[in-house]
Image 1: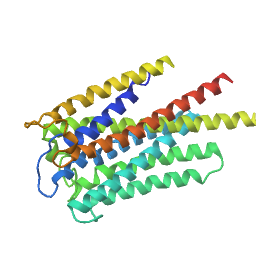
Image 2 (image 1 turned 45 degrees about the vertical axis):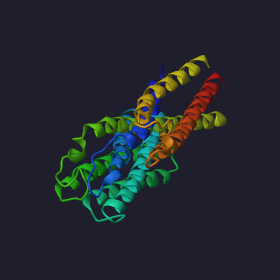
Image 3 (image 1 turned 60 degrees about the horizontal axis):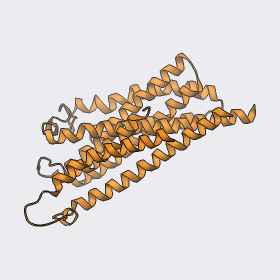
Image 4 (image 1 turned 90 degrees about the vertical axis):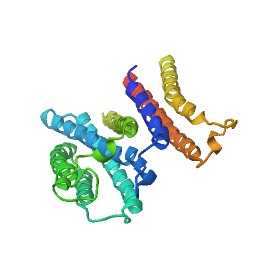
Length: 222
Length: 79
């Protein structure tokens, strides 16, 4: 069975939806039931990180051995990563409104994530500004590497150097507060794997469509 | 086609294996209530059902999209 990981994705995500709402969680003030957002908000960022790593790997491979397929795969992976990052920002904003009392606050973790998303947004703008395909592929592959190298410290290093409201920042080891609970771990890890696999699935289908489109165009001009 | 049928069956089996324990745990209440899971206390199970349906619908769409792309790829290869 070649697509076993897609079946796994479906299973893990449905498990996350059901167990994520029903499995008992620690009863904490302010957080209350919103602690369950951990199964949906945080995996967005995990999925984004993994798919962006894949994207930058495709870009590096493109620069070493240029093929149109690698360029398409890097682009589609980056797009799915950006989508997941935007969903992560939106869900985080909703969560913040009902626990911190505001949609947005000038917190290093939040601003870092926002700036990183803008850097990736510029990747899409840059790509669309070329007409020559090879030039577009090469320059955007190089930019992708720089974007990754700039975005990851903004997500994971800089917020830890200062104080932050956000868990997993301001010197806190990530998840220590919540992850001690075994019940939550039972849902959280499958959720991370499930959402990450979904990101890869979406990127794969998007890449295949883009490749097909390209092949059809080639045939028309041949 | 046969292979895809087998895939679907495997997916359904996996689903059943994952969902059955949850349903079982939810069904254990003290009084002679029967099959009241969806009506009890905070009605959270209604939300669970709704989210499951939404997610299942979206994933089913993604699966069918995936198959369509596979078919197109095959067609282009055969030409």
